[in-house]
Image 1 (cartoon, each protein chain N blue to C red):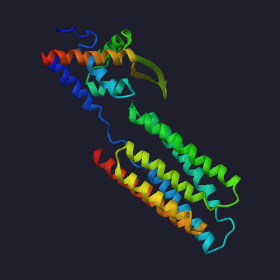
Image 2: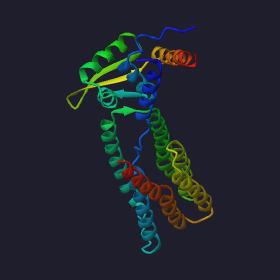
Image 3: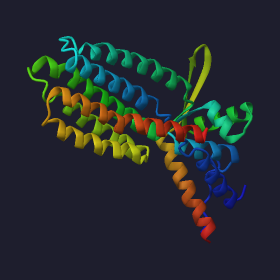
Image 4: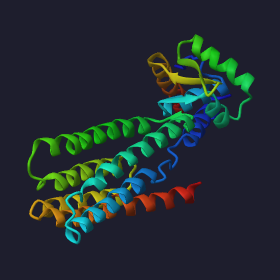
Length: 94
Length: 191
């Protein structure tokens, strides 16, 4: 029986962001941009969607007068990612 | 994006965030050389000049090292764009290591009349810290240095103050200076 894949995670850039954040304690927006090769605008939209789904927290502040955005995965996000992986595995094994 | 592509993407992102070699050995070299020089100055003043203020060198060089480390730490944390789980573990161990060292260095001289145990105790704490750092960084030279420090600490408990200074100098060469320079070389090779 196929399980429905989480539509929030089953999108290339959002999945890339979540994969990175699952692997680190927290990451700055610029780091995510560099690792995913995404444009700032597109990344910003996808980060916002993950934030609205409560999969990540986004902390905005300033450092040396420049805006600083730090993203961190939440417990809900971790659980959703783990379920997504498990659902993916069941697809591939069948 | 199909399921296989999704798995490949996850794999790719994980490999891109693998722990980079971040430690350039700066703190090991800084403290290694500071303690090495201070120990030899202390030894020279005590052994050859019988100077009663032989230990003043520690009161000058150690706070100077603390200030340099503090400034370097601030700069480093500002430059970091990602914080890994390893970074967090290293931070906790660094805090524990520094608090233990400060307690021994500040409280011990004020409460005991003898200096017999001071430097060997320092070497035990050094060994504990660098063994743990070596394990976290998966870096064997630090762990070999830790064993050298433990051995020299045991020997130090049976020696006089001036000989302990030489043992301490040897301990920081094995535990800080050599691993620090090797870390720097490893870091430069990966940059």
